[in-house]
Length: 121
Image (cartoon, rainbow, N blue to C red):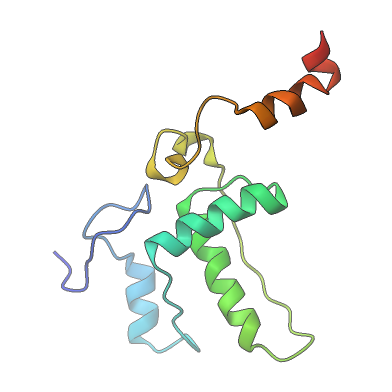
């Protein structure tokens, strides 16, 4: 296996896998910077994207946006930063990504639902 492999919570990435394109690009020194994002930060960012922005993504999407936010903190004023999140979180509902979310509605959520036309019928 690859000597730099470490366990991670990103579903879809085979353990012990570093994409050739990433490894080749690093060897050619094509990058300006490598931004590291941990598993917990990736999960929290994915959850925050869902809660605050309505963007329903997986752990890799959370990692991508977390890295972009780190870059944005250091970028010159007026910079444009692109973070692509081509994913949806629906396939991760039973994974650690949503372990902190109770599948049953609490009283506040029930009251909110009942205040909607669908909840009143």
